[in-house]
Length: 297
Image (cartoon, rainbow, N blue to C red; front, side, top):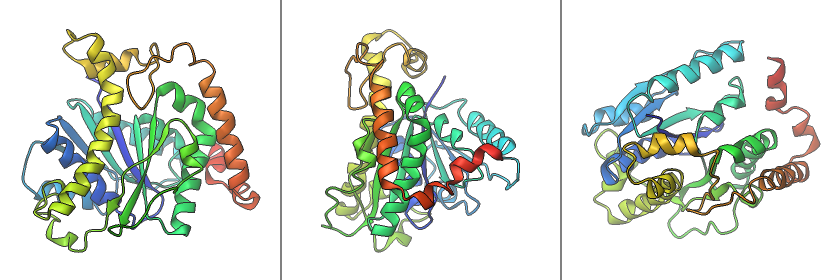
């Protein structure tokens, strides 16, 4: 069985990444009854400890702390091996990783959905958007062929705060989306180790996170359900559909046959992505891009 893989990552700390990843795993397991595995790549182990110490509801939990080393190729092999190990018996794998540029960007291609949480402070938005744009500049054509979905997640947002029009450069790409905002939870410590946001007694907290979880679930279904609906007799639609994905391109927003347009869309998106990066990223940042330097590691 080949599960759908979701990565929650950002190169910045303090964006709610561990909270989002742990609670998203709980949402899929508790609210959608999907067999979920979780892998924690972070040294602090906040997300995996939360899942371990809360009520046991069947999530398979792995901790795979990557050792810092000069050889980025070996680091990539270690990361892929850890991901492969936890993917053996699940329909869905969710990974929590604070991105490090020691890790080659090719690792992002191991995932079907990449979620990048960010606050909407100007500095953090720019940093998060550059992180995604640099990746797309190098990998947009491949990401398009794999139907990879990238989601910017406004995180720790004050209730009622507008998120309209944020991340305009990333959202210009067809495979990129902006999720519903995840509101700041003032008493988050009462949930840590004890319960999950999707089942919070505070109805506002539960509703807000379930809206975010449902949005991610829709994207999950856009990767799984098209093949299932066509081949209803297949016992393992996730695995079978993954084998057919390159043969039958679909729109990320739902079941839509784009076979006739698939040859031109990646090229169009790639040109747009490169143009946006060239306009948006200052020259002095591009010249020192860690992704560019990764070739020589």
